[in-house]
Image (cartoon, rainbow, N blue to C red; front, side, top):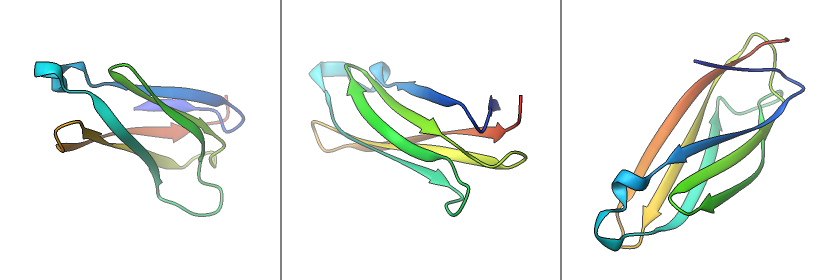
Length: 91
């Protein structure tokens, strides 16, 4: 589990290189945070960086646990998803 301060703006990345065999490329990436609602971390921006996807998160409520999910689409139409869990803690 990752830790995040509520005042921190941090980036999180997934490396999808093992899914890109045979010349496939990442063509789309979307991110979500659960649970949603007041005080949840905000997705500030996201990007595809070669074989990696990246998201910048800010905020969150101290003492809460959140999951951030990344759903990608490959050039052949395959869809995959990964998630990570983090706790917001005043540090």
